[in-house]
Every structure is written in C-alpha cells, then in structure tokens.
Amino acid sequence: MENPVLTTAPAKLYAVLLKVRPIERGSIMPFSGELVHGAWLNWIRDATPDVAAMLHDGNKRRLFTCSSLLFPLSSQRLQYLERENVHIPLDPEKTYALRLTLLLGELFPLFYNTLLHVNMAALGKREQAFIKIGKRSFVLEEVVITGNDASPWIGVTSFAQLLAEIQTLKLHRTHALTLLFDSLTTFNRSNLRGDSYEKHYARLPFPQYVFPGLARRWQELAPPDLAGIVQKELIERYIADEGIVIDDYDLKTHYVSFVRHPQKGFVGSCTYHLRGPDDSTTPESPLSIRQQILLLARFAFYTGCGYKTTMGMGRVRAIEG
Image (cartoon, rainbow, N blue to C red; front, side, top):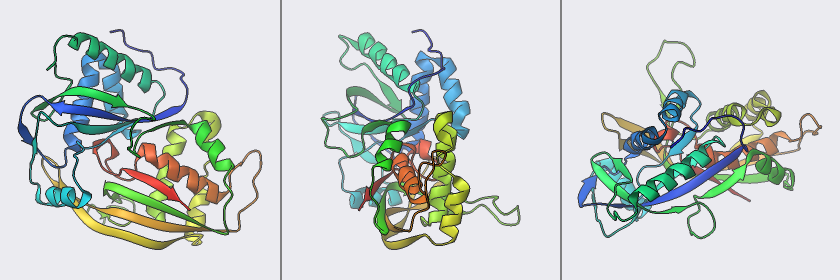
C-alpha cells in the first residue's frame, strides 16, 4: 500500500467505533488503553511506517485518541473491576468495541484505505486477526462512523461546522453546560510552578484545568484561519473573574492500573454555569467568551480532556441546557 502524503485535507474530526471479536477465549486487563494505544500504532506501522512514526513522534500534538477496550457492562461494574484490576474474560461469541478519534483530516483516508486493504487480505480467512491488544487477537466485525448505531460516542464534524453551530446558539443570561467524564480523567499539573514539589495530578475538573487546555488544543489543531477565534488569555481571565462557576456535580475519585503503575483520577459529571453578559463580537473575534467555551466543550468530544487521552483516559462529551 502506498504511503499517503500528509499535506492539505479537509479539517475534519472523526469519532468512530470499531466492533471487534476475540479469536479465542482468554482475559484482558479491565483498563487496556495503554495496550490499545500500542496496538493502534502497530496496526498503522504495518501499512504505513512513515505515518506511524509521525503519529508516535506527534504525541506532543496528540493527533488521535484511543479508548480502552469497551465492554457491555454497567459503569458501576466496570469501575469496580478497574479499581481491583480484575481481568475480564473474553468470549469469542461476543462483540466488543474500541473508540478511535482522528484529529487530522489526512488520517481518515489513511484509516479507510488501510481497513480496505486489511479486509481484502482477510477474504476467505474468517479468523484473520485485525488487531492484537496485549496477548489477545481480535477480528474486525464492523466500523461504525455515523447514523446506524445507538452509541452517543460517534460523530463526524469539522472545525468550520463547530464554529457555525456555536454562532447560531442563543445563550441565556446564565447558560448551563454539563461535561460527562466517561473514562478516568486527571490533569497533569507537574512543573507548573518550578521544581519545588513532586509530580501532581489534579482530580477535580475546575474550569481553570479544563478550558485553557482545550484552548491550546484548538490552537494546535485548527486550520490557520480558524485557530485565532479561540482566545486562551481571555478565557483564562473570564475564569479568574468567576464568569464560569461549578453549579452541580456527580463526581467520584477513581483509579485504574496501567501495565506498570496505577493512575488516579475521577469519573462522573460536572455542571458549569456560564454567566453573562457577553462581550461584543467583531469580524476578527466572531465568538464571545461564552461561545468559545461552548465551542471547546463540543471540541472535547473528539480530543478528550486532560492527561493520556491517547491511552483511553479523558473521554468526555458535553450536555448543554
């Protein structure tokens, strides 16, 4: 398969579900985001080594996110298994899922062409392995991108479409925004104030932890003509002035086990009140600060939020109103 050239492509964002089935019985860690991350890079490396190297080296920009292997279990049951690190049995008769988001327009054609290549190679070989997560091999059953699946975690949009949708919103004087943190989330606060203290991970979604980080992600990933519509310094000032406050929350501390270390964080939901009045907009600054925050909340559906989003952490979606 010929390596694609990463140049100019539509600035789109994709969130897809890969439905997979284990080839044989076995078990796997309840939180496998680290393993899925490695499996995804290996999968790309087999088809396009140059792009795999770019993705690996591009971790500073985090051009994709991966979920852990998703099980048909209640959140309460899964969180218990994650805390206790009880390995979960895999049944070859059952289908599981992986969520993958692509944050660079060129990655989707690569993804599509590689899938096509794999499927053609697998014709007539029912148990042809699609991906190996840890020691467990899986076949691909289905790719779900839009429409026909009940999952709220799939979608396709573009930076321009996100902007257009936000510009049509009518905001109340106090506008409610809820973020659902569906997988372990934390914020790496290390080395922000010198080297006096040890590494620290914040385990609460204070506005100053959530939105400036998302603003940086927008500025890193958006096309040049749209990068400047999010103004990180003004968002930080709005937060410092308590324009955005926490109104309600249903959060709990949580932790999972990576291969070599535990990771602490939190899961649950947090409702923010975005308080007006709004500043005036201009052609150069087409969004008010509150609109920028709502834009970033929708953007987070694709980028994730906080630490290790490429390894299953920080899966989040916004609920407005």
